[in-house]
Length: 280
Image 1 (tube, rainbow, N blue to C red):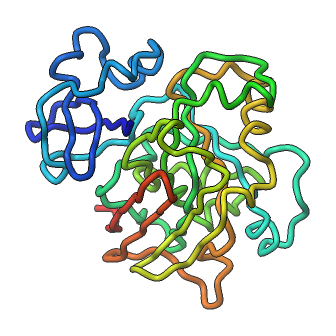
Image 2 (image 1 turned 60 degrees about the horizontal axis):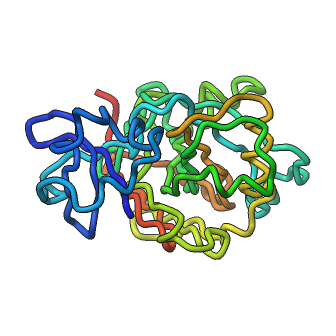
């Protein structure tokens, strides 16, 4: 199943399922029971969305991040071996975690915003893991059981601000600089996520490509570590890191500019597409 959140043509928010370019607006029937997709996940009720609601063309709605209001977005830095190699770092023994905020994340088809204060706007294609159950102190063996599904993620990064200090937060938190979507795909549809492949295209050119099995800290290890520190809630997002090929380390460097298009494709999951505009 593919789970989506979106704005209807009249601007009201809703949620439902997607099949190809068609959305079923389950919120029409279920909004009185579940306010949003996060509430659906918290109730363990994704099966109730199947076949619910009238059909809408995806092109007639504005896509939101699949969970527009997560309690937290945890991002894992330096977590593909190819990216670790290009930065000259050592393989980590623990995940490097920083936070993003929901206001920094847009949905599929909505232009990313390059801020006024920088031209070093970089792309980072990533796999996002969405938590489906409230959990704490999850073992690696049990980690797969708390996953609601997977999505594509662009951890858009303002590199000069990221380098201001040893903390990543400034460069990773600019308003409307990242994206997630088009949907959450449930694990039963994806199969073995470690067998899938991530590709980032900028203006149609492949700039990043790696198997999910290139992760230095794997998905169960991330969930076990994060849940040791803090309770994970349904709808929480873990962005699992980016492969080598980011714009900062290319020669010449490649940064996002207005008019460009960034595509993050993960086999078995989907393709997240965003244009780029300058901040007004």
